[in-house]
Image 1 (cartoon, one colour):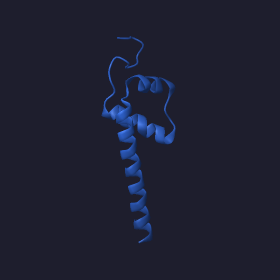
Image 2: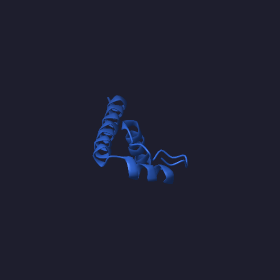
Image 3: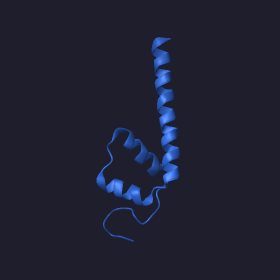
Length: 70
């Protein structure tokens, strides 16, 4: 295990995946976090979380528009 302060010795969990996908929605992922993501995130989990968060975002927008208009 490396002693340089990053968490490259473990696989990323669901919370790490959600953080990475959420940050990518806004484009605010740092270089060190990106390196961790590339080595530890499961691509299938990233795709599934991305689809889920995008769906939640669209549904939230629809609900806000309906509340304002209706």
